[in-house]
Length: 168
Image 1 (cartoon, rainbow, N blue to C red):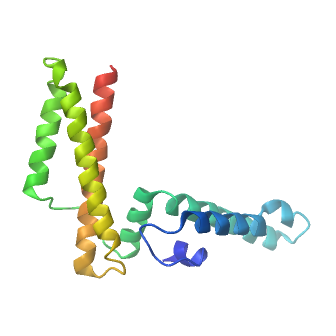
Image 2 (tube, helix red, strand yellow; image 1 turned 90 degrees about the vertical axis):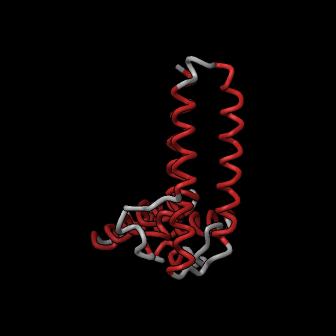
């Protein structure tokens, strides 16, 4: 896990945010390109690469969704993007999509649908908390995290569609 190693942090779904930021800032100062203006061209290039790597590592690790995707990629679990989702989840998605498309005909259902989305997000948060207890991952445990990851992607798509639909 190069990014976690870069910041000398254990692999975690919820790394210490203040420690991550502190180490990011420390490395930012260390590799800032302005400090290498009088250095050799090779050192300047290396500093620029390190600075870019530092920024990318921080960007990925500071966001929970990109952090999960990164962890799953590092374990080689997203090589095949085919994911068999549980039937009850697929049914929930279908019901939400249908309800969103029917909002024009039944605007009074807006509030209930918004509440259902909030409940769904809370359920996903509970799943994420459970997944956090599974680190370090092995293949069996990683399936939970992978399923959460895909559910979250679908949820975000539906939530975004809901708010786009309701704002128009």
